[in-house]
Length: 466
Image 1 (cartoon, rainbow, N blue to C red):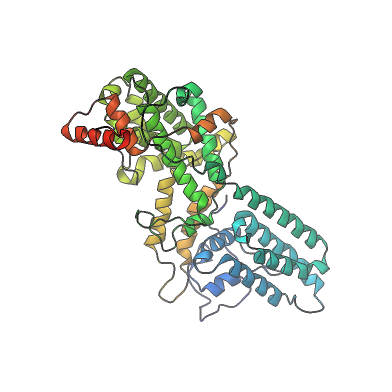
Image 2: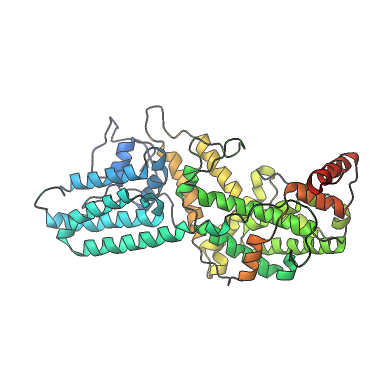
Protein backbone atom coordinates (compact mmCIF):
# COMPACT_ATOMS: atom_id res chain seq x y z
CA UNK A 1 0.00 0.00 0.00
CA UNK A 2 1.33 3.44 -0.83
CA UNK A 3 1.37 6.20 1.73
CA UNK A 4 0.03 9.62 0.84
CA UNK A 5 2.79 12.08 -0.06
CA UNK A 6 2.61 15.82 0.54
CA UNK A 7 3.75 17.64 -2.62
CA UNK A 8 3.59 21.13 -1.83
CA UNK A 9 26.81 27.38 -18.56
CA UNK A 10 24.24 29.74 -18.66
CA UNK A 11 24.71 31.52 -15.44
CA UNK A 12 27.47 31.11 -12.95
CA UNK A 13 28.16 34.45 -11.27
CA UNK A 14 31.66 35.47 -12.25
CA UNK A 15 33.93 38.42 -11.92
CA UNK A 16 32.67 41.60 -13.53
CA UNK A 17 34.74 44.43 -14.90
CA UNK A 18 33.50 47.76 -13.58
CA UNK A 19 31.85 50.03 -16.15
CA UNK A 20 33.90 53.10 -17.05
CA UNK A 21 31.64 55.52 -15.16
CA UNK A 22 31.61 57.04 -11.72
CA UNK A 23 29.15 55.79 -9.04
CA UNK A 24 25.88 57.72 -8.99
CA UNK A 25 23.25 58.64 -6.42
CA UNK A 26 25.82 59.10 -3.68
CA UNK A 27 27.18 55.57 -3.94
CA UNK A 28 30.68 54.94 -2.73
CA UNK A 29 33.35 53.69 -5.11
CA UNK A 30 34.38 51.18 -2.47
CA UNK A 31 30.94 49.54 -2.11
CA UNK A 32 30.89 45.83 -1.17
CA UNK A 33 31.08 43.37 -4.06
CA UNK A 34 29.92 39.78 -4.49
CA UNK A 35 31.99 37.73 -6.96
CA UNK A 36 32.91 41.00 -8.64
CA UNK A 37 29.29 42.18 -8.99
CA UNK A 38 27.80 44.87 -6.74
CA UNK A 39 25.90 43.33 -3.84
CA UNK A 40 23.60 46.35 -4.03
CA UNK A 41 23.32 49.46 -6.15
CA UNK A 42 20.79 51.94 -7.44
CA UNK A 43 18.76 50.98 -10.49
CA UNK A 44 20.47 53.74 -12.48
CA UNK A 45 23.90 52.34 -11.66
CA UNK A 46 22.86 48.81 -12.60
CA UNK A 47 21.49 50.06 -15.93
CA UNK A 48 24.75 51.91 -16.55
CA UNK A 49 26.63 48.69 -15.80
CA UNK A 50 24.65 47.00 -18.60
CA UNK A 51 25.53 49.54 -21.29
CA UNK A 52 28.61 48.65 -23.39
CA UNK A 53 31.19 51.19 -24.55
CA UNK A 54 34.09 51.08 -26.98
CA UNK A 55 36.29 49.61 -24.23
CA UNK A 56 33.83 47.79 -21.95
CA UNK A 57 31.38 44.92 -22.22
CA UNK A 58 29.45 43.45 -19.25
CA UNK A 59 29.94 39.82 -18.26
CA UNK A 60 27.29 37.35 -19.44
CA UNK A 61 26.45 36.54 -15.84
CA UNK A 62 25.66 40.17 -15.16
CA UNK A 63 23.62 40.58 -18.34
CA UNK A 64 21.44 37.55 -17.56
CA UNK A 65 21.02 38.42 -13.87
CA UNK A 66 20.07 42.03 -14.48
CA UNK A 67 17.77 41.38 -17.46
CA UNK A 68 16.03 38.64 -15.46
CA UNK A 69 15.46 40.72 -12.32
CA UNK A 70 15.13 44.24 -13.74
CA UNK A 71 11.49 43.63 -14.76
CA UNK A 72 10.61 43.86 -11.06
CA UNK A 73 11.60 47.53 -11.17
CA UNK A 74 11.21 48.68 -14.77
CA UNK A 75 9.29 47.46 -17.82
CA UNK A 76 11.57 45.78 -20.39
CA UNK A 77 10.52 48.23 -23.12
CA UNK A 78 11.44 51.17 -20.86
CA UNK A 79 14.75 49.54 -19.94
CA UNK A 80 15.59 49.08 -23.62
CA UNK A 81 14.71 52.71 -24.31
CA UNK A 82 17.04 53.86 -21.54
CA UNK A 83 19.87 51.59 -22.70
CA UNK A 84 19.53 52.88 -26.26
CA UNK A 85 19.41 56.49 -25.03
CA UNK A 86 22.60 55.99 -22.98
CA UNK A 87 24.33 54.42 -25.98
CA UNK A 88 23.38 57.37 -28.18
CA UNK A 89 24.39 59.88 -25.53
CA UNK A 90 27.72 58.30 -24.55
CA UNK A 91 28.84 57.52 -28.09
CA UNK A 92 27.51 60.84 -29.43
CA UNK A 93 25.45 59.01 -32.05
CA UNK A 94 23.17 62.03 -32.44
CA UNK A 95 25.99 64.15 -33.90
CA UNK A 96 25.98 64.87 -37.64
CA UNK A 97 29.57 63.58 -37.91
CA UNK A 98 30.44 60.33 -36.08
CA UNK A 99 33.80 59.22 -34.74
CA UNK A 100 34.02 56.18 -37.03
CA UNK A 101 37.02 54.62 -35.30
CA UNK A 102 35.22 54.80 -31.96
CA UNK A 103 31.92 53.52 -33.35
CA UNK A 104 33.66 50.56 -35.00
CA UNK A 105 34.92 49.52 -31.56
CA UNK A 106 31.53 50.11 -29.95
CA UNK A 107 29.25 48.71 -32.68
CA UNK A 108 30.06 44.98 -32.31
CA UNK A 109 29.58 45.22 -28.54
CA UNK A 110 26.18 46.86 -28.93
CA UNK A 111 25.07 44.21 -31.41
CA UNK A 112 26.34 41.46 -29.11
CA UNK A 113 24.29 42.83 -26.21
CA UNK A 114 21.18 43.07 -28.38
CA UNK A 115 21.76 39.52 -29.65
CA UNK A 116 22.07 38.13 -26.12
CA UNK A 117 18.97 40.03 -24.99
CA UNK A 118 16.79 38.90 -27.92
CA UNK A 119 18.04 35.32 -27.71
CA UNK A 120 17.42 34.85 -23.97
CA UNK A 121 14.38 37.10 -23.45
CA UNK A 122 12.63 37.26 -26.85
CA UNK A 123 9.25 38.10 -25.30
CA UNK A 124 10.69 41.46 -24.24
CA UNK A 125 10.47 42.41 -27.93
CA UNK A 126 6.87 41.53 -28.71
CA UNK A 127 5.80 45.19 -28.91
CA UNK A 128 6.55 47.07 -32.11
CA UNK A 129 7.97 50.01 -30.12
CA UNK A 130 10.82 47.85 -28.83
CA UNK A 131 11.76 46.84 -32.37
CA UNK A 132 11.74 50.56 -33.20
CA UNK A 133 14.36 51.24 -30.52
CA UNK A 134 16.59 48.51 -31.96
CA UNK A 135 16.32 49.82 -35.51
CA UNK A 136 16.94 53.39 -34.38
CA UNK A 137 20.13 52.78 -32.43
CA UNK A 138 21.60 50.38 -35.00
CA UNK A 139 20.59 52.75 -37.81
CA UNK A 140 22.76 55.40 -36.18
CA UNK A 141 25.91 53.25 -36.30
CA UNK A 142 25.19 51.63 -39.69
CA UNK A 143 26.84 54.44 -41.74
CA UNK A 144 30.17 53.49 -40.15
CA UNK A 145 29.93 49.89 -41.31
CA UNK A 146 27.18 48.39 -43.49
CA UNK A 147 27.81 45.01 -41.83
CA UNK A 148 25.93 46.38 -38.80
CA UNK A 149 22.72 46.70 -40.79
CA UNK A 150 23.09 43.16 -42.14
CA UNK A 151 23.73 41.83 -38.64
CA UNK A 152 20.66 43.65 -37.38
CA UNK A 153 18.56 42.11 -40.15
CA UNK A 154 19.76 38.62 -39.15
CA UNK A 155 19.05 39.36 -35.49
CA UNK A 156 15.48 40.46 -36.24
CA UNK A 157 14.87 37.41 -38.44
CA UNK A 158 16.00 35.10 -35.63
CA UNK A 159 13.86 37.04 -33.15
CA UNK A 160 10.72 36.76 -35.29
CA UNK A 161 11.27 33.03 -35.73
CA UNK A 162 11.66 32.61 -31.98
CA UNK A 163 8.52 34.60 -31.22
CA UNK A 164 6.54 32.62 -33.79
CA UNK A 165 7.67 29.33 -32.25
CA UNK A 166 6.93 30.53 -28.72
CA UNK A 167 3.50 31.69 -29.83
CA UNK A 168 2.61 28.07 -30.51
CA UNK A 169 3.80 27.00 -27.07
CA UNK A 170 0.56 26.25 -25.25
CA UNK A 171 -1.90 25.98 -28.16
CA UNK A 172 -1.54 22.24 -28.58
CA UNK A 173 -2.24 21.68 -24.89
CA UNK A 174 -5.31 23.84 -24.39
CA UNK A 175 -8.29 21.87 -23.14
CA UNK A 176 -6.44 18.58 -22.75
CA UNK A 177 -6.25 18.93 -18.96
CA UNK A 178 -9.99 19.12 -18.27
CA UNK A 179 -11.25 16.09 -16.29
CA UNK A 180 -14.51 14.37 -17.20
CA UNK A 181 -17.27 13.32 -14.84
CA UNK A 182 -17.67 9.62 -14.17
CA UNK A 183 -20.94 8.32 -15.61
CA UNK A 184 -20.17 4.83 -16.71
CA UNK A 185 -16.97 3.08 -17.64
CA UNK A 186 -16.52 3.89 -21.36
CA UNK A 187 -16.52 0.93 -23.75
CA UNK A 188 -13.19 -0.11 -25.20
CA UNK A 189 -14.09 1.51 -28.52
CA UNK A 190 -14.21 4.91 -26.79
CA UNK A 191 -11.56 4.57 -24.11
CA UNK A 192 -8.37 2.87 -25.22
CA UNK A 193 -6.39 1.88 -22.16
CA UNK A 194 -2.76 3.02 -22.10
CA UNK A 195 -1.34 -0.50 -22.07
CA UNK A 196 -3.09 -1.09 -25.38
CA UNK A 197 -1.17 1.84 -26.85
CA UNK A 198 2.18 1.23 -25.16
CA UNK A 199 3.05 -1.84 -23.10
CA UNK A 200 6.80 -1.13 -22.75
CA UNK A 201 7.66 0.95 -19.63
CA UNK A 202 10.94 2.18 -21.11
CA UNK A 203 9.19 3.43 -24.27
CA UNK A 204 6.54 5.28 -22.25
CA UNK A 205 9.24 6.85 -20.04
CA UNK A 206 10.97 8.08 -23.20
CA UNK A 207 7.74 9.53 -24.59
CA UNK A 208 6.98 11.25 -21.28
CA UNK A 209 10.48 12.75 -21.41
CA UNK A 210 9.77 13.94 -24.95
CA UNK A 211 6.61 15.69 -23.74
CA UNK A 212 8.38 17.22 -20.73
CA UNK A 213 11.22 18.70 -22.79
CA UNK A 214 8.79 20.01 -25.40
CA UNK A 215 6.74 21.79 -22.72
CA UNK A 216 9.85 23.11 -20.93
CA UNK A 217 11.28 24.55 -24.14
CA UNK A 218 8.53 27.18 -24.27
CA UNK A 219 9.03 28.48 -20.71
CA UNK A 220 10.94 31.76 -20.70
CA UNK A 221 13.23 32.54 -17.73
CA UNK A 222 11.32 35.79 -17.14
CA UNK A 223 8.16 33.81 -16.30
CA UNK A 224 9.70 32.73 -12.98
CA UNK A 225 10.01 36.38 -11.95
CA UNK A 226 6.71 37.58 -13.41
CA UNK A 227 4.77 34.79 -11.70
CA UNK A 228 5.60 36.09 -8.24
CA UNK A 229 5.14 39.82 -8.58
CA UNK A 230 2.88 40.56 -5.60
CA UNK A 231 1.46 37.03 -5.81
CA UNK A 232 1.37 34.05 -3.50
CA UNK A 233 1.50 30.74 -5.43
CA UNK A 234 0.77 28.76 -2.26
CA UNK A 235 -2.57 30.43 -1.60
CA UNK A 236 -5.35 29.04 -3.77
CA UNK A 237 -7.29 32.30 -3.55
CA UNK A 238 -4.40 34.21 -5.13
CA UNK A 239 -3.40 32.57 -8.42
CA UNK A 240 0.17 33.39 -9.33
CA UNK A 241 -0.25 33.11 -13.08
CA UNK A 242 -1.03 35.89 -15.51
CA UNK A 243 -0.95 36.54 -19.24
CA UNK A 244 2.86 36.65 -19.12
CA UNK A 245 3.19 33.20 -17.56
CA UNK A 246 1.08 31.07 -19.93
CA UNK A 247 3.77 28.47 -20.54
CA UNK A 248 4.56 28.14 -16.85
CA UNK A 249 0.88 27.55 -16.16
CA UNK A 250 0.56 25.06 -19.02
CA UNK A 251 3.45 23.05 -17.61
CA UNK A 252 1.92 22.90 -14.14
CA UNK A 253 -1.35 21.76 -15.76
CA UNK A 254 0.56 19.03 -17.61
CA UNK A 255 1.88 17.70 -14.27
CA UNK A 256 -1.65 17.66 -12.82
CA UNK A 257 -3.01 15.96 -15.92
CA UNK A 258 -0.39 13.21 -15.72
CA UNK A 259 -1.28 12.61 -12.04
CA UNK A 260 -4.96 12.20 -12.90
CA UNK A 261 -4.21 10.12 -16.01
CA UNK A 262 -2.24 7.64 -13.91
CA UNK A 263 -5.04 7.44 -11.34
CA UNK A 264 -7.69 7.07 -14.08
CA UNK A 265 -5.80 4.27 -15.82
CA UNK A 266 -5.49 2.39 -12.52
CA UNK A 267 -9.13 2.83 -11.45
CA UNK A 268 -10.59 2.07 -14.89
CA UNK A 269 -10.23 -1.77 -15.17
CA UNK A 270 -13.04 -3.80 -13.63
CA UNK A 271 -10.80 -6.67 -12.44
CA UNK A 272 -8.25 -6.24 -9.67
CA UNK A 273 -5.70 -8.37 -11.56
CA UNK A 274 -5.81 -5.84 -14.40
CA UNK A 275 -5.59 -2.92 -11.97
CA UNK A 276 -2.56 -4.50 -10.30
CA UNK A 277 -0.97 -4.96 -13.71
CA UNK A 278 -1.45 -1.26 -14.49
CA UNK A 279 0.07 -0.26 -11.13
CA UNK A 280 3.13 -2.45 -11.71
CA UNK A 281 3.46 -1.01 -15.21
CA UNK A 282 3.51 2.54 -13.85
CA UNK A 283 6.03 1.56 -11.19
CA UNK A 284 8.35 0.38 -13.96
CA UNK A 285 7.70 3.56 -15.96
CA UNK A 286 8.52 5.67 -12.90
CA UNK A 287 11.76 3.76 -12.36
CA UNK A 288 12.79 4.36 -15.98
CA UNK A 289 11.95 8.07 -15.59
CA UNK A 290 14.27 8.16 -12.57
CA UNK A 291 17.07 6.50 -14.55
CA UNK A 292 16.62 8.97 -17.41
CA UNK A 293 16.64 11.98 -15.06
CA UNK A 294 12.97 12.85 -15.66
CA UNK A 295 12.01 13.70 -12.08
CA UNK A 296 8.86 15.64 -12.99
CA UNK A 297 7.13 12.66 -14.64
CA UNK A 298 8.43 10.46 -11.83
CA UNK A 299 6.77 12.62 -9.17
CA UNK A 300 3.55 12.91 -11.20
CA UNK A 301 3.31 9.10 -11.44
CA UNK A 302 4.02 8.63 -7.74
CA UNK A 303 1.50 11.35 -6.87
CA UNK A 304 -1.13 9.71 -9.07
CA UNK A 305 -0.61 6.35 -7.36
CA UNK A 306 -0.83 8.04 -3.96
CA UNK A 307 -4.17 9.72 -4.65
CA UNK A 308 -6.74 8.46 -2.15
CA UNK A 309 -9.01 6.75 -4.73
CA UNK A 310 -5.97 4.63 -5.75
CA UNK A 311 -4.32 4.11 -2.38
CA UNK A 312 -7.59 2.75 -0.84
CA UNK A 313 -7.66 -0.19 -3.30
CA UNK A 314 -6.24 -2.60 -0.73
CA UNK A 315 -7.21 -5.80 -2.54
CA UNK A 316 -5.55 -4.50 -5.68
CA UNK A 317 -2.36 -3.42 -3.92
CA UNK A 318 -2.18 -6.85 -2.24
CA UNK A 319 -1.46 -8.30 -5.68
CA UNK A 320 1.29 -5.76 -6.44
CA UNK A 321 5.01 -6.30 -5.89
CA UNK A 322 5.61 -3.04 -4.08
CA UNK A 323 9.34 -3.22 -3.26
CA UNK A 324 10.35 -1.12 -6.29
CA UNK A 325 7.57 1.36 -5.55
CA UNK A 326 8.75 1.91 -1.97
CA UNK A 327 12.28 2.61 -3.26
CA UNK A 328 10.93 5.27 -5.61
CA UNK A 329 8.78 6.76 -2.83
CA UNK A 330 11.89 6.95 -0.68
CA UNK A 331 13.74 8.86 -3.40
CA UNK A 332 10.92 11.42 -3.64
CA UNK A 333 10.11 11.54 0.09
CA UNK A 334 9.32 15.15 1.13
CA UNK A 335 11.02 14.61 4.51
CA UNK A 336 13.87 17.02 5.16
CA UNK A 337 12.74 19.35 2.39
CA UNK A 338 13.01 16.55 -0.20
CA UNK A 339 16.56 15.75 0.88
CA UNK A 340 16.74 12.44 -1.03
CA UNK A 341 15.39 13.98 -4.22
CA UNK A 342 17.81 16.91 -4.03
CA UNK A 343 20.71 14.47 -3.70
CA UNK A 344 19.48 12.57 -6.77
CA UNK A 345 19.01 15.85 -8.67
CA UNK A 346 22.61 16.91 -7.90
CA UNK A 347 23.78 13.53 -9.18
CA UNK A 348 21.84 13.95 -12.41
CA UNK A 349 23.12 17.52 -12.81
CA UNK A 350 26.72 16.33 -12.38
CA UNK A 351 26.14 13.56 -14.92
CA UNK A 352 24.76 16.15 -17.32
CA UNK A 353 27.88 18.32 -17.02
CA UNK A 354 30.20 15.41 -17.84
CA UNK A 355 27.88 13.73 -20.37
CA UNK A 356 29.15 12.21 -23.60
CA UNK A 357 25.67 11.74 -25.08
CA UNK A 358 22.34 13.60 -25.20
CA UNK A 359 20.79 10.77 -23.21
CA UNK A 360 23.08 11.53 -20.23
CA UNK A 361 22.43 15.28 -20.40
CA UNK A 362 18.75 15.02 -19.47
CA UNK A 363 17.75 16.71 -16.21
CA UNK A 364 14.06 17.47 -15.75
CA UNK A 365 13.51 18.76 -12.20
CA UNK A 366 10.40 18.27 -10.10
CA UNK A 367 8.89 21.51 -11.31
CA UNK A 368 6.53 22.40 -8.46
CA UNK A 369 9.41 22.20 -5.99
CA UNK A 370 11.60 24.34 -8.25
CA UNK A 371 8.87 27.00 -8.34
CA UNK A 372 8.52 26.88 -4.55
CA UNK A 373 12.30 27.19 -4.07
CA UNK A 374 12.32 30.28 -6.27
CA UNK A 375 9.23 31.64 -4.54
CA UNK A 376 10.75 31.29 -1.06
CA UNK A 377 14.01 32.82 -2.26
CA UNK A 378 11.98 35.76 -3.53
CA UNK A 379 9.98 36.02 -0.30
CA UNK A 380 12.97 35.50 2.01
CA UNK A 381 14.93 38.53 0.83
CA UNK A 382 13.82 42.08 0.07
CA UNK A 383 14.13 43.35 -3.50
CA UNK A 384 15.38 46.67 -2.21
CA UNK A 385 17.49 47.63 0.81
CA UNK A 386 16.44 50.37 3.24
CA UNK A 387 18.50 52.91 1.28
CA UNK A 388 16.49 52.14 -1.84
CA UNK A 389 19.24 50.23 -3.60
CA UNK A 390 18.45 47.04 -5.50
CA UNK A 391 19.47 43.93 -3.53
CA UNK A 392 21.59 42.50 -6.34
CA UNK A 393 23.01 39.74 -4.15
CA UNK A 394 19.54 38.21 -4.00
CA UNK A 395 19.15 38.30 -7.77
CA UNK A 396 22.52 36.65 -8.36
CA UNK A 397 21.19 33.65 -6.43
CA UNK A 398 17.88 33.78 -8.30
CA UNK A 399 19.72 33.87 -11.62
CA UNK A 400 21.84 30.90 -10.60
CA UNK A 401 18.72 28.78 -10.04
CA UNK A 402 16.87 29.96 -13.14
CA UNK A 403 20.02 29.78 -15.27
CA UNK A 404 20.56 26.15 -14.33
CA UNK A 405 16.99 25.40 -15.40
CA UNK A 406 17.57 27.18 -18.74
CA UNK A 407 20.58 24.95 -19.37
CA UNK A 408 18.53 21.81 -18.68
CA UNK A 409 15.58 22.83 -20.84
CA UNK A 410 17.81 23.39 -23.88
CA UNK A 411 18.83 19.72 -24.08
CA UNK A 412 17.67 18.12 -27.32
CA UNK A 413 15.51 15.07 -26.69
CA UNK A 414 17.43 12.00 -27.96
CA UNK A 415 14.29 9.85 -28.18
CA UNK A 416 12.23 9.66 -31.35
CA UNK A 417 8.66 10.78 -30.83
CA UNK A 418 5.84 8.27 -31.17
CA UNK A 419 2.82 10.40 -32.18
CA UNK A 420 0.26 7.77 -31.16
CA UNK A 421 1.61 7.63 -27.60
CA UNK A 422 2.04 11.39 -27.11
CA UNK A 423 -1.43 11.99 -28.59
CA UNK A 424 -2.89 9.59 -26.03
CA UNK A 425 -1.01 11.28 -23.18
CA UNK A 426 -2.48 14.64 -24.22
CA UNK A 427 -6.02 13.62 -25.11
CA UNK A 428 -7.07 10.46 -23.22
CA UNK A 429 -10.08 11.14 -20.93
CA UNK A 430 -9.26 11.65 -17.25
CA UNK A 431 -11.68 11.46 -14.35
CA UNK A 432 -12.32 14.30 -11.95
CA UNK A 433 -11.57 13.60 -8.29
CA UNK A 434 -15.21 12.62 -7.65
CA UNK A 435 -15.13 10.43 -10.73
CA UNK A 436 -12.02 8.67 -9.45
CA UNK A 437 -13.65 8.02 -6.08
CA UNK A 438 -16.75 6.58 -7.72
CA UNK A 439 -14.68 4.31 -9.97
CA UNK A 440 -12.66 3.24 -6.94
CA UNK A 441 -15.77 2.43 -4.87
CA UNK A 442 -17.26 0.43 -7.72
CA UNK A 443 -14.00 -1.51 -8.07
CA UNK A 444 -13.65 -2.18 -4.34
CA UNK A 445 -16.70 -1.55 -2.15
CA UNK A 446 -16.65 1.12 0.57
CA UNK A 447 -15.20 -0.20 3.83
CA UNK A 448 -16.64 2.17 6.43
CA UNK A 449 -19.63 4.40 7.01
CA UNK A 450 -17.85 7.52 5.75
CA UNK A 451 -17.00 5.85 2.45
CA UNK A 452 -20.52 4.42 2.14
CA UNK A 453 -22.08 7.86 2.60
CA UNK A 454 -19.69 9.41 0.10
CA UNK A 455 -20.39 6.64 -2.42
CA UNK A 456 -24.13 7.16 -2.08
CA UNK A 457 -23.74 10.91 -2.49
CA UNK A 458 -21.52 10.51 -5.56
CA UNK A 459 -23.89 8.03 -7.19
CA UNK A 460 -26.76 10.42 -6.59
CA UNK A 461 -24.99 13.53 -7.91
CA UNK A 462 -22.99 12.04 -10.78
CA UNK A 463 -25.07 9.09 -11.90
CA UNK A 464 -28.47 10.50 -10.92
CA UNK A 465 -29.24 7.48 -8.73
CA UNK A 466 -30.79 7.42 -5.27
